[in-house]
Length: 390
Image (cartoon, rainbow, N blue to C red; front, side, top):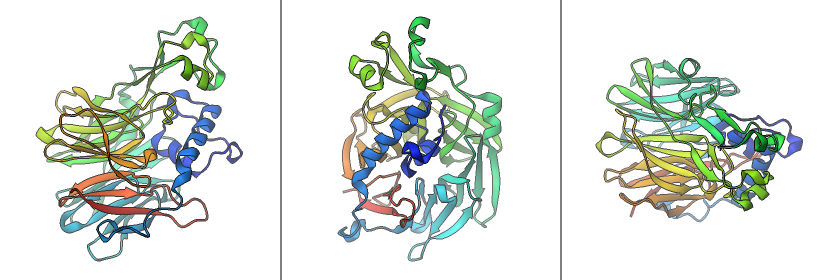
């Protein structure tokens, strides 16, 4: 996805914008300093109510299992209640054994990111990212604790760029209209650029699937061979008069469709071996262009992709049960939503502060919450919590 990095703190680019830029890349399709600043203002307005937190009066059934985490954006559950959680921007992978304190089991040097954690057959898979979406590597810790590299997604992206032929931006715009676009909007149209940001993994026998938020694709790793399962379809927003006015677009754009990059944020294996993928748009999520977050079901063999839920905001993680009911973490909406099997509608299941990821195990839903709580000079506020499903 395309993105302009923040230029200076004087533009109001807070820690929250850094998280948006480094992780979600949601302002990609409208790259430019002004658009990034606008996203910062949106993020700030969305995040401002959460500082107080909610842990003090929590009932025992929902008290944190792990707390004091920095950006815990990825979660996995192992045998016997073992919890694995990433501290993405601290570059650490944590393991918490039942009744014990969480310990670091993998780390990267300053400036690196660890995320995309999953567990299968006592092996822990995770991703290491660096730079401006140039480096994305998948690693695995086996049952004996040996940590080894599995795949280099940056190399695969440079050679293949799965969404290179996808057109993003204003569809059907004339050259005359494109010339009237504000400079900060960037090009009227663009194709997928070369970048990788592995955001989630899940594994089955002999294969690991990756939601690559940079490539806008779901990838498969078999042995050390990487392949593309599917490229998610663009998130489409019609430019209405109100939207054009709020964004500062010329009148000639009214009625056009704008195709945002569809950014995969989680992947899980659901009923009949189908892949369930959450996604958010590479653009604003304040509702100014519509609630464009979705959940897709992807056939891992054919790559056929069907949208099964829409209308989500900042969908950063999902879990699916054996019947096909889906739970989604909506980060900036401060809630976990549920999509009943066979229904396209997401309904609020539980209000929590800034959920980042969700998992199902033992008749409970586990979630990372408060994932961006705790700015510079403050104690990190991220938590792992579990909730009864009934």
